[in-house]
Image (tube, rainbow over all chains, first blue to last red; front, side, top):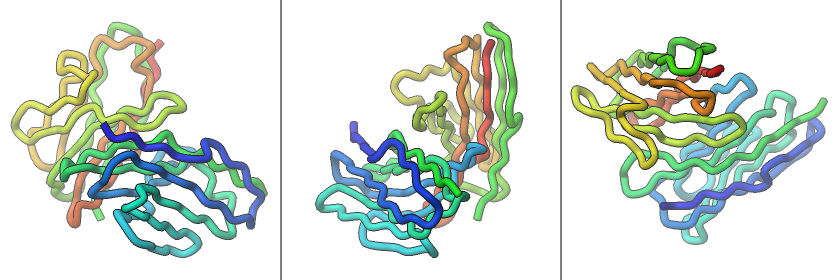
Length: 109
Length: 113
């Protein structure tokens, strides 16, 4: 099956810093999403981005489908950005998501 | 956007017992899924909950261990049977809504002693 690799596995930032999270995938995909799991376990969909670039406030994401990677940018990080960021992909219209192992982000005040 | 609720939010159970988790969606979704997240790990798909028929299980998951029901478009249950400590995880329900947007429930945190 498809492999999804995220890097870095852990990231510690000071408030106000910028960061880039990466997601590599091993095969072509129909769908790619970025999720944020807060410390209470709730998963929030950040971006649905099979290709191209999208921005939402301090967050933006870019997927280069031909090169099989996606990037999530966090600017001016805040303590509330802490949590685990997951990349998930879907193949072949199955609607099933395959998740990467996540990047655990800690933003210190 | 669809709102998904799960019950219970957490539970502590003894090994050998079973727990049924409920998932309720506030609007109709086309598909519902159950995921497991073991401690410190990523999410793994258990099965697709099919309305009115048997669920479709992923490799490594079987109906006897994780029976699933979906009697209508907005409700599903997952039972974790004959539990062992290895079943300690967060169990999440996911619904596929309009525009193929995925919505996750808040999860059920299960600890098996």
